[in-house]
Amino acid sequence: MVKEIDERIQEIDNEIENMQKEEIVDEAQIYVLKRERHDLIKMCKNLSPHVKVYLARHKKRPKITEYVENIFSDFFEQRGDDLGKEDASIYGGIAMFHGRPVTVLGHRKGTDLAENMKCNFGMPGPEGYRKALRLMKQAEKFGRPIITFIDTPGAYPGLEAEMYGQGTAIANNLAKMSDLKVPVIAIVTGEGSSGGALAIGVANTVLMLENSVYSILSPEGYASILWKDATRSDEACELMKLTAQDLLSFRVIDAIIPEPVGGAHLNPKAVFKTVDKYIKHELDRYAKAGPEEIAKLRYKKFRNIDSEFLKVAQW
Image (cartoon, rainbow, N blue to C red):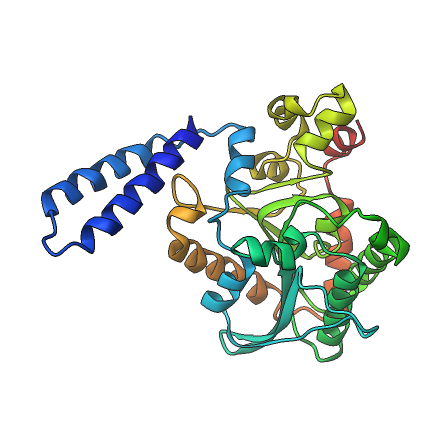
């Protein structure tokens, strides 16, 4: 149902855009269309887990480049893994946030097909995770807080990635992030799957947008393993406890960032403003904490994850 509503909303937006280009604008018809759009959006409440997966993957959902452009200033992108290769699926660099220098990095999927392919649809190889590790080490050296944006179907599982150390690159990130002496704020903005997400998600504070999802693998993969039938992915969504609401109850995440009714793609500017507020609040919390205390708080956070969630994840 939500998919059909979303498609109709996009049709209305296109109709309004075309009508506004006409020499004589039919304001009455535009009003009727806007009213219909408003009523459709109001229907997008109490969403099921599989609908949240749909919204988390929405092609118009805000991407990391948009978050960087709208929340940070003076962003300077850094590239390369120090071994000779650039992985476009990890986007990161130095920026200013409310007058303080920070390091920002995250998964990049791209905004059109050409960018999707260039960024491997947000699935980093080992080079991408080595780049992320390089930026995090640099941030620690200069005392800059780290903000990460998670949005990936998982690390790239291809033969070449495995050959060049995918597992080792992810493991090195997990180990280093566990001991970083600067605050790390991670935000799941879309989908966060498997070690590909966790490799930049070991944070002092983990936040999720209201309609994002965070899980051990995709629902399709889960259904394929459990029932040998990927078409049962909707059913898998119910079992996986992958929504922000589920994960908050298990203490896997620390807070849920609200989205506009119908999804972040319907009002990105409101989302940027809210995310900005949450990041500032979390950084202010750690402003007076010493380096060793920051690392201890991160360790304590992950030790306090609800044991019931660990049972679900293992099952």
